[in-house]
Image 1 (tube, rainbow, N blue to C red):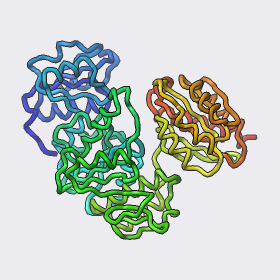
Image 2: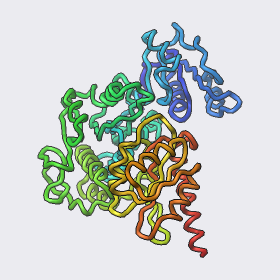
Image 3: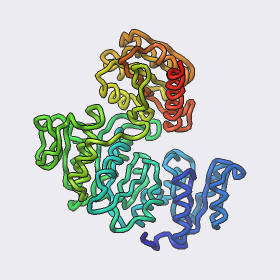
Image 4: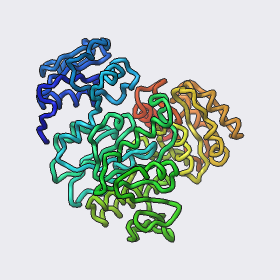
Length: 457
């Protein structure tokens, strides 16, 4: 870890704790900053704030007093979940104070080079893919970022013998100043998080930050099949390396005569890939390209492509009961992610969908519902809107229920042998669950109860 002097004796306000805010506060304290943390949760219930206070960090809990932003503050570090229209953030920007997310801190202290991965969908799968592919190569991988490991915590353990593989959300990328990955991976871009960013343009501008600091000695791996991404990356100074599942590419990755080819080397037949769906083929091409550029061994890359079991909550295979296969795709928090999941299966699908109502249309599901879905059970705030899309698609069986457990049990009851029962909500989880992980875990628990009940019969 680089013991940088940038924050020494500086007044830094950290807004929002949870994992990233807490880790940022600990790091800043270690770097000699005068840290104040501010969190909405009351002090009496806030164990993270209490622990930070014991270290000597100043703590303000239960509200967000506007006077926390004043002329004595040098820097603001915000939890990515804190929006930019938050009064404290607005005031900080008006006062021209630097507003960072902890990813910027990670970059400043890391002794390791970084691979950064962003996109609307597939980030976690691709990040995990790359990490697995780098084992046994030139450098030891360390996974961090939106994947669940706080980057500035991981960076404290990183040395020059490591490669940090960092999943980056648009929320995190908005809070950078110098962050520069040696290798950037831009997977895709669809309309998402507009309630946070305000417009598609602002969302795209946030994503661009992954490459805007790169130089011509860096690499930008991008999806040549995505018109938006292909257009945006033309602003980059880094060496552009495309990947495609549709056209043959020489300096990059593509499919040629049924083979996965990276930098003109045939790795394996595409049909040998362990994960289903064209989207996973696209993720695999991106990951293999990044891993080989970063010094991964080709044999390890091929081994991972053949054996990778996927990531929890992302088309995760839960098991089979009475001829029905269950998949947990709780990470599908938007319509394009569910469209991608529906395309991954050749078998008829019983779809479970629903969640937080953001006022978005579900009409984008209609063509895939018509082609792939035999039955749909919707639940939560969006149940009626999803059911309406299913009616437009002429899905034979449509039912709305209140809870995910009801939906899962009904889906099993109405399914037949040979069908896939797929949780792919097309919505955020926050109407009934704190996170998409909690939602996926609940689905898995219900499915396992179904397994046990059917074993007993």
